Length: 148
Image: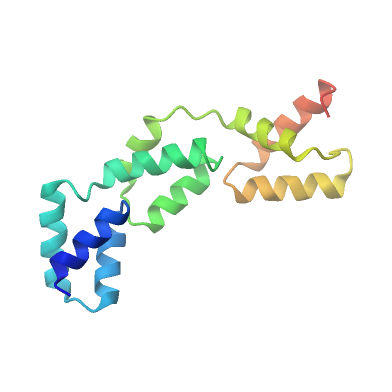
């Protein structure tokens, strides 16, 4: 299949970062110089836009997947998104981590007075990209408020 046709097939299925798109084409066996040319061409046409990709990724990660900033940053870096674009995408999204942490804790409906269970919940939330200090502060607030 021609590189242009294959590339078009890919971008019509879903959004890609430039790095993801390049890696996919190179893995498929296309030459690196051909891939670079196609990436530039698709970027000019608007099919590849790292800023738009990052904005959508941040939005979905915050609102649908309930992830913390740390995890979002790591995942975007792994997808080849530059730091300045990551910063711009994050600044464009309203992120209130304490509210998200609270929502995720209450959703689990567990007794956080049990230290074993509390540590398990903390680990799970840290994996989602939230800072331990923020998680502990939310737990403390919930326990003081008699919610837990």
